[in-house]
Image 1 (cartoon, chains in turn blue, green):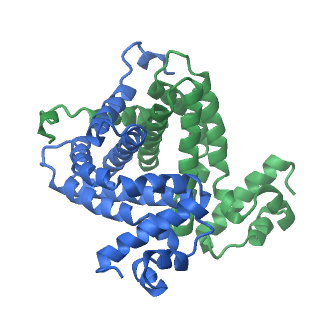
Image 2 (cartoon, chains in turn orange, cyan):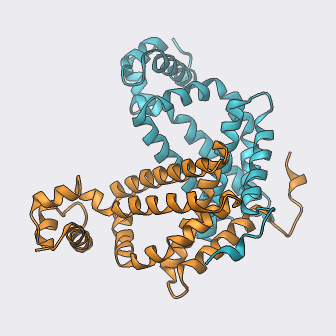
Length: 196
Length: 196
């Protein structure tokens, strides 16, 4: 039997990822997850409204951590600088979570219904980041632009880090922010006058 | 009776926007939309799988136009320069479409189920833009970053233009691309060394 709530939750997530990976998301039931985790089905539903949410609990923790870091960034930080600090501040957490997030990615990639959910959750997280930037005094449209560009940078960094974990996530974040700057200022040719 | 397919579709969209605006999306049926447009319910379903899709037909046209423009941008264009050209190339179309897109925004803002759909469609459009950039030889992660940042710029410009149509959409696009550059290069203080 798990010793406490946090332990039960972790066992449920581990069991769910194993079963989803082995049998597929659609073929796995909450009862099977509970049995594998050594808890009752009722305990499962005390932790999660359905089996899908097992895969998204991390995003809510991430959102809370990012919000706090964005709010706490020094007032003189630009929106992107505040986001960069926030992403760097959660890098350790994300690295320690890789044993969950890596199988999770494969399960989501294999399950269209989960991809839709992932898109919706990502949009909600981006919205939350934008609202937190507004609390720093960033105008609302600018906050939305910064949040969307920033979350695109985070995705870029995470994808790079999943492909190559040998350099840490902070290194991939540095590269991703450079890449964003490179995109908006092509150095090789005069492009502005070409627009009609 | 509408004279042809294109005319029927336009009448259906107009009728749907009027009814959604007056009675709410949930309270309006496909039969009511068809009746107001002067066509049969069967004709409605020849054009749209359900009443929700009436609101998203424009996005599919936009996607096709953007794709074509991205592919046709000169090979020396950076990803962002190619996107800028593509957005400018659809500005006329978007401006002419304002009589539909403006009420559409209000209806979506008032209907949570439609917001979810909007998020999913926006993600699909962003994905399509990324894939089109890849056809130009842009590496896949870089293409995704450019597409996400670019679509954020387009949203910023559109929001500005909806709030202030007196300056055209191209002006708002110019401002939005400047804003993106401003976000990633805060000029006033040294921020890089502050990261741990």
